[in-house]
Length: 146
Image 1 (cartoon, rainbow, N blue to C red):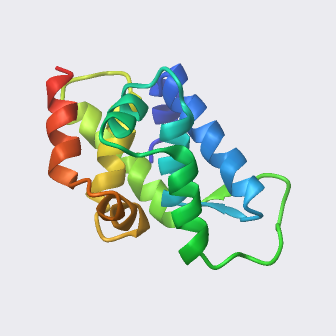
Image 2: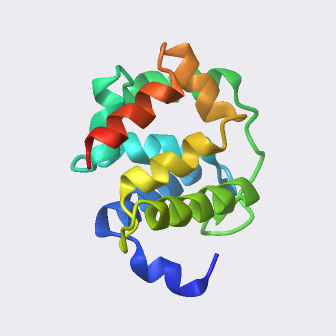
């Protein structure tokens, strides 16, 4: 990802990433993963993506429980700050591209959510399915934001 892309992230998107980092740290993980991004989106109280996800029936505590049931915990922290996993870097790249496709200069939380669902072979998509949420529903809700 280009280095100046970080400057284009909205305050809410930065908060989501901060929540994701805290979640990774709380779970004693040394990398921020897709699941942490999903939880970060749900934790951001004013974000449009969190609103969409909650409206579709996702609850942060239920999501945490499902994630912890299937997650393999990493044994130790490697640093004081969780690093972005390669998959999360791809999600951020996809978020930047989603903003560009929509003709928007600022990367909002909905772009981050679009980036997350574009990586549709992962754990977050499994979580959506567990709660009966289809990726197409999320995309449709995001399209309504225009």
